[in-house]
Length: 132
Image (cartoon, rainbow, N blue to C red; front, side, top):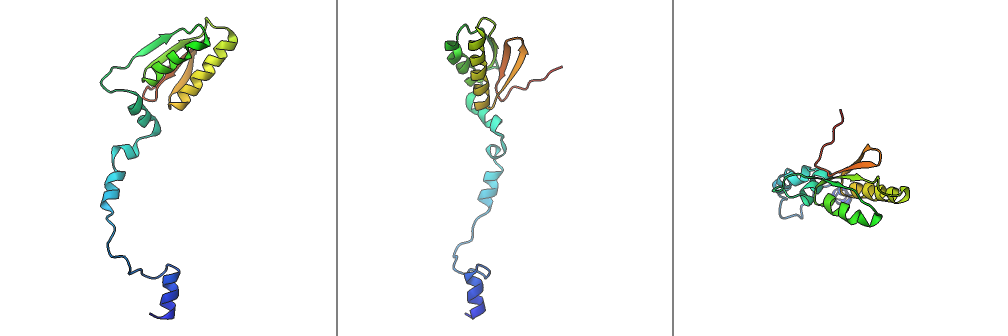
């Protein structure tokens, strides 16, 4: 092998002849074209937290204290839309509850929308909210 060829091979510019097997690119193309590869984060979250066999439900909850937050979280993580009315709570606890709900919605790729004074809608990732 000539000096120029050795330098080119050392720098990675020459042809590498030490590979015995060729790489099969078809397997990678098939994997990239799979449904999971193209799904957005919200679609993957919707599949994870919601059973397709169950119909969609909207749950109306009126928490009285911040300790009711796990109930809201459980329904939301099960893929149910939750309408949360915090009118019966003190302002400080209502603020904490809304902060909790906003974090829950963000962490599960959902949304939170205010629909009335102290009434909020927590929508899972697969629920589309339109206003009109």
